[in-house]
Image 1 (cartoon, one colour):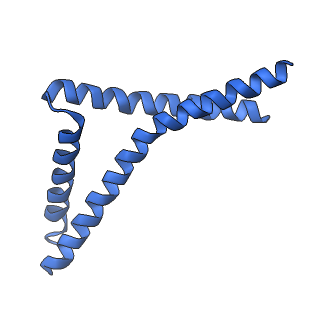
Image 2: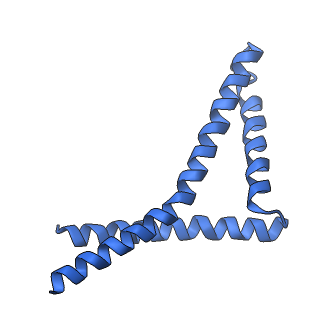
Length: 106
């Protein structure tokens, strides 16, 4: 598989993923009336509290449960930021694919 075909395939896969995630975020912000920053805070608190509830029967020590919940919330925050940054990466790959296509046409 040539490089331009690989780039087109990657761009197509990311297009579908990024568009779905971005549309979901727009829908939630429209539905709740909150801006994205507030939504990130509420989601982070929700993930933190949910992690505390899930680890309660599994881990007896309170400090350990807090640390696990903090790690899970941090992981989801990084995951959300990664999904948001895919849009920038996708635009960059579109430019690369267009540039390679133009170079091959010459």
